[in-house]
Length: 166
View 1 (cartoon, rainbow, N blue to C red):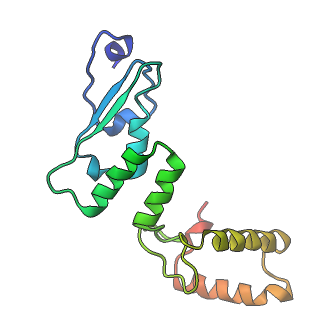
View 2: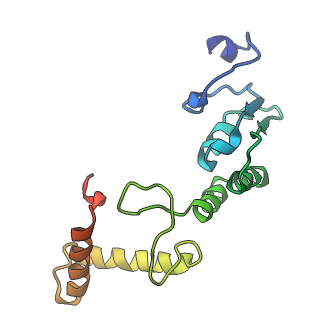
C-alpha cells in the first residue's frame, strides 16, 4: 500500500476495503469486477477513490454474465450521474426503504395512504408536523394528542421499537 501511495507500484489489487479511508490522489483508474453485485452507495464510494488529483480518471464497471434487470439499472445509474443524492434517490425507488422501525434494509413499506417516494412533499410535511407536535409535547400527554399516543402504544405492542435503543 505504501509503495502504491508513493508511486513505486503502478497497480494495486484489493478487496472493497479500499473504500475505507484510502486517499491516493495519483490513482486514476479503478476496475470493479462483478459491479452488479454491489449496491449503489458502495459503488459510489469506490468510484470516489480515483480522480482525487488533477489527472483524468476512469472507473470501469465490469459485470458478470448473469446481469439482472436491477443490476443493469444500478450500473446505468452509475454511468448516468456522479451525484450521490441522485443515486440515493434512485436506490430508494429501486429497492424501497425497508422497515423504518426494524432491521430490514430494503423492501416496500405498507403505507395505507402515501408512497414514500412518489409523495415526497407529503412525507416531508407530515415529518415536520410530527416534529412540531413532539417538540411541544414529547410524551404525547396533552388531550389533543391522545389519539396519537394510543396509536403509538398499539404499534409498539405489535413490533419491536428499535428507535428506543440508542
